[in-house]
Length: 153
Image 1 (cartoon, helix red, strand yellow):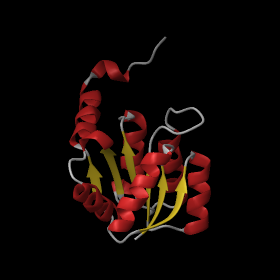
Image 2 (cartoon, one colour):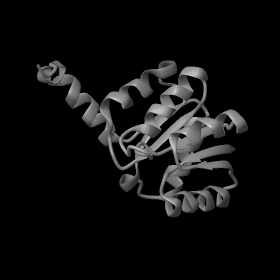
Image 3 (cartoon, rainbow, N blue to C red):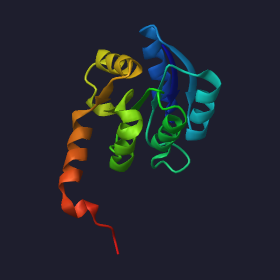
């Protein structure tokens, strides 16, 4: 599988490259910013994208917004978000993109075994949806809370 990997932490990015290559995958490009991610996908046409949520320059949600841009241009592009954080609004948008096919949202600290991550990546690349149960819990809790729909004055 050909992968574009976006992660601003060089140690984590290089570690993931080694791990993925050990399982027979090819990381065709590594990106440390959202702009680099978008350019790498245009240049390399990967089978799947793996991206962090928070990336330079703002370290807020640049990686997830880039994933949404990529899915808007290429609705069938499989994207796996790998993050420490749940960004509810963008997670909902990502899961809604292309009817939620070929998307995943995993929390880094909740992956118990490397094989779970590699399996999730293969499932996303095949068009499945893979979402960490904690992400699901936060999305459901937010939708049930009627006050969450209110905006600040």
